[in-house]
Figure 1 (spheres, helix red, strand yellow):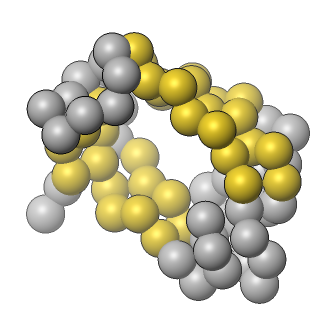
Figure 2 (cartoon, helix red, strand yellow):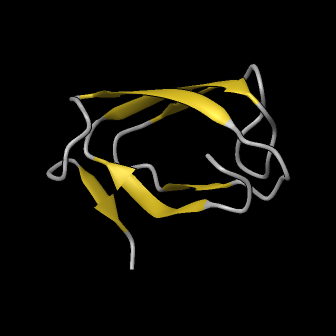
Length: 71
């Protein structure tokens, strides 16, 4: 995630496992593993001056049908 970028609040109709490989920001810390339950609302906010790199696994796989963005 580029500096100053964000991803709006959303949830998945399955589980999400996210591992932060590089960087720290408001919502992501390097070396941390996040497990989000089905329908758990979350967002991404990179308020730092450096890129944040993370890998996400969703079960079932990410799709328009199983990711719901909040208004």
